[in-house]
Length: 265
Ligand code: NAD
Image (cartoon, rainbow, N blue to C red; front, side):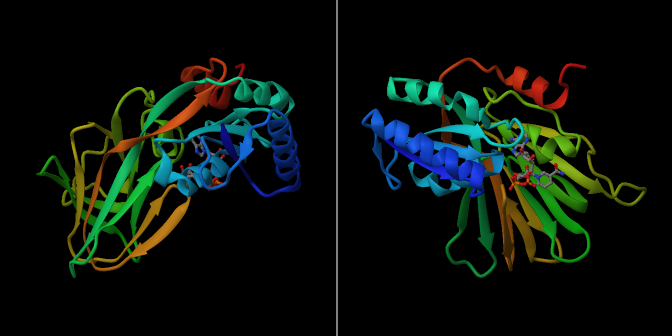
């Protein structure tokens, strides 16, 4: 089996990366940065987001596992003291794999040309470059509302505990194939009206955003921020692809939610 390790880049994560690499090679596993069967991310959730984007072309062939060198992460749930245990578990393949849905983003431009396609593990957000975001929101081809406000956040179930949560969105279990649309400070008065509640769309529903006046947008895909000019539409739906996580012990999603946000209170 071939493996790769991505590190957050700080000295603690780098040292742990080298230690795991040596251990795994001692078990005669092959280090292959280009075509790994398993990617170990050492750092935090941000490091796993980076690893996901780096290996997004081979999601069907690669499983991910995260070790955290800071606080407990949603994707990075192994602690440095457990790496010997983790290495032995990886070496003794086959391991269990769980798959989570991800988000497909397609941006089309007014001047035609090739559409831009992205995959997000957490979410994609849309904000205006200047002033309020004003966009028509369509669901499954039907106009739903005209949104005015700071922006919109479209998240995956596993990303629902990230930015979406800070916006008052619901936490979705990642076994649910859905995307969630959450508002950022919508303008609501006698003139302008939006639904105000987060919307959860099933796998076969598409959410389309279309500009009203301005056509330049600041669009994020996980940790990446992109500027897209002359935008005709931004389309969101559950992607065909999924992310695979290598599971070596049970760590139920709701326990992770509780450990991260509630603690022992
Ligand atoms: P960062 O360094 O600002 O870290 C963001 C925090 O989000 C970290 O504590 C990380 O552990 C946590 N996080 C990431 N994914 C998570 C998930 N699925 N569930 C729960 N917590 C999660 O930024 P980064 O490390 O580059 O991560 C980018 C992410 O930051 C974005 O995908 C977005 O979700 C999040 N973000 C959150 C807010 C907010 O909560 N107000 C604002 C901007 C971005």
